[in-house]
Image (tube, rainbow, N blue to C red; front, side):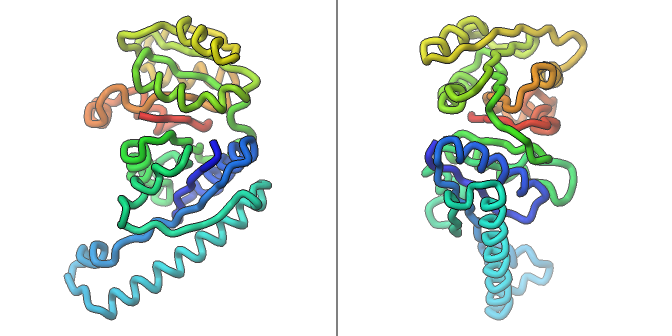
Amino acid sequence: MKAILVPLSDTSGMPSMVRCAGLVGTQFDSHIEGAYVRAEPSVILASDDTGATTPALIESFEREDAARAERLQQAFLSACSEVGAGALASVTEVGGVGGGLGGYGRLFDLIVVGRPGREADSPPMTTLETALFDTGRALLIAPPTAPDSVSKNIVIAWNGSSETARTIGLALPLLLKADKVTVVTVDTGVVTGPDGGGVVEYLSRHGITAERDDVAAGSRGAGEAMLDEVYKLGGDLMVKGGYTRSRLRQTIFGGPTSHILANAEIAVFMAH
Protein backbone atom coordinates (compact mmCIF):
# COMPACT_ATOMS: atom_id res chain seq x y z
CA MET A 1 0.00 0.00 0.00
CA LYS A 2 2.39 2.58 -1.29
CA ALA A 3 -0.13 5.13 -2.55
CA ILE A 4 -2.95 6.56 -0.39
CA LEU A 5 -5.44 9.21 -1.52
CA VAL A 6 -7.40 11.51 0.79
CA PRO A 7 -10.12 13.63 -0.90
CA LEU A 8 -10.17 17.01 0.85
CA SER A 9 -13.34 18.79 1.95
CA ASP A 10 -14.78 21.15 4.56
CA THR A 11 -16.20 18.40 6.78
CA SER A 12 -15.97 17.35 10.41
CA GLY A 13 -14.52 14.00 9.33
CA MET A 14 -11.20 15.35 8.02
CA PRO A 15 -9.18 14.99 11.28
CA SER A 16 -10.12 11.33 11.53
CA MET A 17 -9.43 10.75 7.83
CA VAL A 18 -5.93 12.21 8.14
CA ARG A 19 -5.30 10.21 11.31
CA CYS A 20 -6.34 6.96 9.60
CA ALA A 21 -4.25 7.73 6.52
CA GLY A 22 -1.26 8.44 8.72
CA LEU A 23 -1.66 5.28 10.78
CA VAL A 24 -1.71 3.14 7.64
CA GLY A 25 0.80 5.16 5.66
CA THR A 26 3.51 5.04 8.30
CA GLN A 27 3.27 1.23 8.37
CA PHE A 28 4.07 0.98 4.66
CA ASP A 29 6.07 4.17 4.11
CA SER A 30 3.29 5.20 1.75
CA HIS A 31 2.86 8.32 -0.31
CA ILE A 32 -0.20 10.12 1.12
CA GLU A 33 -1.82 12.60 -1.25
CA GLY A 34 -4.48 15.11 -0.30
CA ALA A 35 -6.56 15.89 -3.37
CA TYR A 36 -8.86 18.87 -3.70
CA VAL A 37 -11.56 18.01 -6.23
CA ARG A 38 -12.35 21.19 -8.17
CA ALA A 39 -15.95 22.01 -8.89
CA GLU A 40 -16.95 23.07 -12.39
CA PRO A 41 -18.27 26.68 -12.14
CA SER A 42 -20.60 26.32 -15.12
CA VAL A 43 -22.38 23.41 -13.45
CA ILE A 44 -22.60 25.05 -10.02
CA LEU A 45 -23.71 28.46 -11.26
CA ALA A 46 -26.26 26.99 -13.66
CA SER A 47 -28.19 25.78 -10.62
CA ASP A 48 -28.54 29.35 -9.36
CA ASP A 49 -32.13 30.63 -9.40
CA THR A 50 -31.23 33.54 -11.65
CA GLY A 51 -29.52 31.31 -14.22
CA ALA A 52 -27.00 34.11 -14.82
CA THR A 53 -23.55 32.61 -15.49
CA THR A 54 -21.76 35.84 -16.37
CA PRO A 55 -17.95 36.01 -16.75
CA ALA A 56 -17.76 38.03 -13.53
CA LEU A 57 -19.63 35.35 -11.58
CA ILE A 58 -17.42 32.61 -13.00
CA GLU A 59 -14.28 34.57 -12.13
CA SER A 60 -15.54 35.13 -8.58
CA PHE A 61 -16.38 31.45 -8.18
CA GLU A 62 -12.97 30.33 -9.45
CA ARG A 63 -11.21 32.76 -7.11
CA GLU A 64 -13.13 31.47 -4.09
CA ASP A 65 -12.55 27.87 -5.16
CA ALA A 66 -8.80 28.45 -5.46
CA ALA A 67 -8.70 30.02 -2.01
CA ARG A 68 -10.63 27.06 -0.56
CA ALA A 69 -8.24 24.61 -2.21
CA GLU A 70 -5.21 26.42 -0.78
CA ARG A 71 -6.69 26.50 2.72
CA LEU A 72 -7.65 22.82 2.72
CA GLN A 73 -4.33 21.70 1.26
CA GLN A 74 -2.34 23.59 3.86
CA ALA A 75 -4.55 22.25 6.64
CA PHE A 76 -3.99 18.72 5.31
CA LEU A 77 -0.19 19.08 5.25
CA SER A 78 -0.20 20.48 8.79
CA ALA A 79 -2.44 17.65 10.03
CA CYS A 80 -0.18 15.04 8.41
CA SER A 81 2.81 16.56 10.20
CA GLU A 82 0.95 16.41 13.50
CA VAL A 83 0.35 12.65 13.13
CA GLY A 84 3.95 11.95 12.10
CA ALA A 85 3.30 11.57 8.38
CA GLY A 86 4.44 14.97 7.14
CA ALA A 87 7.37 13.56 5.17
CA LEU A 88 4.98 11.24 3.31
CA ALA A 89 2.40 13.88 2.34
CA SER A 90 1.75 15.99 -0.73
CA VAL A 91 -1.24 17.82 -2.23
CA THR A 92 -2.81 18.17 -5.65
CA GLU A 93 -5.98 19.36 -7.40
CA VAL A 94 -8.28 17.14 -9.46
CA GLY A 95 -10.58 18.45 -12.18
CA GLY A 96 -13.20 16.84 -14.37
CA VAL A 97 -10.73 15.81 -17.09
CA GLY A 98 -9.81 12.15 -16.66
CA GLY A 99 -12.92 11.23 -14.72
CA GLY A 100 -12.57 13.43 -11.64
CA LEU A 101 -12.16 11.63 -8.33
CA GLY A 102 -13.45 8.36 -9.81
CA GLY A 103 -10.75 8.36 -12.45
CA TYR A 104 -7.87 9.78 -10.42
CA GLY A 105 -8.50 7.35 -7.57
CA ARG A 106 -7.60 4.43 -9.83
CA LEU A 107 -3.94 5.41 -9.42
CA PHE A 108 -3.94 4.64 -5.67
CA ASP A 109 -3.91 1.51 -3.52
CA LEU A 110 -6.23 2.96 -0.90
CA ILE A 111 -8.68 5.86 -0.71
CA VAL A 112 -9.49 7.28 2.71
CA VAL A 113 -12.95 8.80 3.09
CA GLY A 114 -15.06 9.83 6.07
CA ARG A 115 -18.08 7.97 7.37
CA PRO A 116 -21.20 9.85 6.24
CA GLY A 117 -23.49 11.13 8.96
CA ARG A 118 -26.71 13.06 9.50
CA GLU A 119 -24.97 16.31 10.45
CA ALA A 120 -24.68 19.03 7.82
CA ASP A 121 -20.87 19.11 8.04
CA SER A 122 -20.35 15.34 7.96
CA PRO A 123 -18.55 13.69 5.01
CA PRO A 124 -20.86 13.32 1.99
CA MET A 125 -22.13 9.94 0.81
CA THR A 126 -21.46 11.02 -2.78
CA THR A 127 -17.68 11.00 -2.19
CA LEU A 128 -17.80 7.55 -0.64
CA GLU A 129 -19.96 6.13 -3.43
CA THR A 130 -17.79 7.65 -6.16
CA ALA A 131 -14.67 6.14 -4.60
CA LEU A 132 -16.33 2.77 -4.00
CA PHE A 133 -17.99 2.26 -7.37
CA ASP A 134 -15.88 4.27 -9.83
CA THR A 135 -12.24 3.69 -8.82
CA GLY A 136 -12.04 -0.10 -8.54
CA ARG A 137 -9.91 0.44 -5.42
CA ALA A 138 -10.30 -0.25 -1.71
CA LEU A 139 -11.64 2.34 0.72
CA LEU A 140 -10.66 3.02 4.29
CA ILE A 141 -13.72 4.63 5.87
CA ALA A 142 -12.66 6.70 8.86
CA PRO A 143 -14.99 6.86 11.89
CA PRO A 144 -16.26 10.25 13.13
CA THR A 145 -13.74 10.29 16.00
CA ALA A 146 -10.06 9.85 15.15
CA PRO A 147 -8.99 6.36 16.32
CA ASP A 148 -5.93 5.44 18.39
CA SER A 149 -5.12 2.51 16.12
CA VAL A 150 -6.10 0.95 12.81
CA SER A 151 -5.46 -2.69 11.79
CA LYS A 152 -3.90 -4.09 14.95
CA ASN A 153 -7.02 -6.15 15.70
CA ILE A 154 -8.84 -6.84 12.43
CA VAL A 155 -12.29 -8.37 12.13
CA ILE A 156 -13.34 -9.76 8.76
CA ALA A 157 -17.11 -9.53 8.22
CA TRP A 158 -17.47 -12.70 6.17
CA ASN A 159 -20.73 -13.39 4.35
CA GLY A 160 -19.58 -15.78 1.64
CA SER A 161 -19.81 -13.18 -1.15
CA SER A 162 -17.48 -12.38 -4.04
CA GLU A 163 -17.41 -8.72 -2.88
CA THR A 164 -16.01 -9.72 0.51
CA ALA A 165 -13.57 -12.22 -1.04
CA ARG A 166 -12.18 -9.43 -3.22
CA THR A 167 -11.97 -7.09 -0.25
CA ILE A 168 -9.99 -9.65 1.75
CA GLY A 169 -7.52 -9.96 -1.12
CA LEU A 170 -7.02 -6.19 -1.21
CA ALA A 171 -6.61 -6.10 2.59
CA LEU A 172 -3.85 -8.76 2.71
CA PRO A 173 -1.02 -6.23 3.35
CA LEU A 174 -2.86 -5.03 6.47
CA LEU A 175 -3.86 -8.54 7.54
CA LEU A 176 -0.22 -9.66 7.38
CA LYS A 177 0.78 -6.92 9.83
CA ALA A 178 -2.14 -7.37 12.26
CA ASP A 179 -1.67 -8.69 15.80
CA LYS A 180 -5.03 -10.46 15.69
CA VAL A 181 -7.44 -11.48 12.93
CA THR A 182 -10.95 -12.87 13.45
CA VAL A 183 -13.33 -14.11 10.75
CA VAL A 184 -16.88 -13.35 11.90
CA THR A 185 -20.00 -14.72 10.20
CA VAL A 186 -23.52 -13.67 11.21
CA ASP A 187 -26.02 -16.43 10.50
CA THR A 188 -28.66 -14.18 8.88
CA GLY A 189 -26.25 -12.22 6.70
CA VAL A 190 -24.78 -14.86 4.37
CA VAL A 191 -25.05 -15.76 0.71
CA THR A 192 -24.14 -19.03 -0.96
CA GLY A 193 -20.38 -19.50 -0.59
CA PRO A 194 -17.63 -20.89 1.64
CA ASP A 195 -17.97 -20.70 5.41
CA GLY A 196 -15.65 -18.92 7.80
CA GLY A 197 -13.47 -21.98 8.19
CA GLY A 198 -12.56 -21.78 4.52
CA VAL A 199 -11.43 -18.18 4.96
CA VAL A 200 -9.30 -19.14 7.96
CA GLU A 201 -7.61 -21.83 5.86
CA TYR A 202 -7.08 -19.41 2.96
CA LEU A 203 -5.44 -16.87 5.26
CA SER A 204 -3.18 -19.54 6.75
CA ARG A 205 -1.70 -20.10 3.29
CA HIS A 206 -0.56 -16.48 3.41
CA GLY A 207 1.01 -16.95 6.84
CA ILE A 208 -1.89 -15.28 8.66
CA THR A 209 -3.27 -16.93 11.79
CA ALA A 210 -6.98 -16.21 12.15
CA GLU A 211 -9.79 -17.37 14.42
CA ARG A 212 -13.31 -18.26 13.33
CA ASP A 213 -16.33 -16.77 15.09
CA ASP A 214 -19.91 -17.67 14.11
CA VAL A 215 -22.61 -15.40 15.54
CA ALA A 216 -26.38 -15.84 15.87
CA ALA A 217 -28.14 -12.57 15.11
CA GLY A 218 -31.27 -13.35 17.08
CA SER A 219 -33.63 -10.39 16.86
CA ARG A 220 -30.90 -8.08 15.54
CA GLY A 221 -30.20 -7.21 11.93
CA ALA A 222 -27.04 -8.70 10.42
CA GLY A 223 -25.24 -5.34 10.41
CA GLU A 224 -26.10 -4.62 14.04
CA ALA A 225 -25.03 -8.11 15.12
CA MET A 226 -21.74 -7.73 13.25
CA LEU A 227 -20.94 -4.37 14.85
CA ASP A 228 -21.82 -5.74 18.30
CA GLU A 229 -19.37 -8.61 17.77
CA VAL A 230 -16.63 -6.34 16.47
CA TYR A 231 -16.89 -4.17 19.58
CA LYS A 232 -16.97 -7.27 21.80
CA LEU A 233 -13.72 -8.46 20.18
CA GLY A 234 -12.10 -5.06 20.56
CA GLY A 235 -11.54 -4.72 16.83
CA ASP A 236 -10.03 -1.53 15.44
CA LEU A 237 -10.69 -2.33 11.76
CA MET A 238 -13.51 -4.16 9.99
CA VAL A 239 -12.86 -5.69 6.57
CA LYS A 240 -16.14 -5.84 4.66
CA GLY A 241 -17.37 -6.16 1.10
CA GLY A 242 -19.63 -3.28 0.10
CA TYR A 243 -23.22 -3.81 -1.04
CA THR A 244 -23.61 -7.55 -1.60
CA ARG A 245 -27.26 -6.59 -2.01
CA SER A 246 -27.91 -3.85 -4.55
CA ARG A 247 -27.44 -0.24 -3.52
CA LEU A 248 -31.06 0.58 -4.39
CA ARG A 249 -32.41 -2.34 -2.36
CA GLN A 250 -30.34 -1.32 0.68
CA THR A 251 -31.44 2.31 0.32
CA ILE A 252 -35.10 1.27 0.36
CA PHE A 253 -35.10 -1.71 2.70
CA GLY A 254 -31.83 -1.35 4.60
CA GLY A 255 -29.06 -3.92 4.84
CA PRO A 256 -25.76 -4.72 6.59
CA THR A 257 -23.68 -2.28 4.53
CA SER A 258 -26.12 0.58 5.08
CA HIS A 259 -26.27 -0.10 8.82
CA ILE A 260 -22.49 -0.25 9.17
CA LEU A 261 -21.94 2.91 7.12
CA ALA A 262 -24.40 4.73 9.36
CA ASN A 263 -23.15 3.46 12.70
CA ALA A 264 -19.56 2.13 12.73
CA GLU A 265 -17.35 3.75 15.36
CA ILE A 266 -14.19 2.05 14.07
CA ALA A 267 -12.46 2.21 10.70
CA VAL A 268 -13.92 0.05 7.92
CA PHE A 269 -11.91 -1.34 5.00
CA MET A 270 -14.33 -1.78 2.10
CA ALA A 271 -14.39 -2.64 -1.61
CA HIS A 272 -17.11 -3.62 -4.04
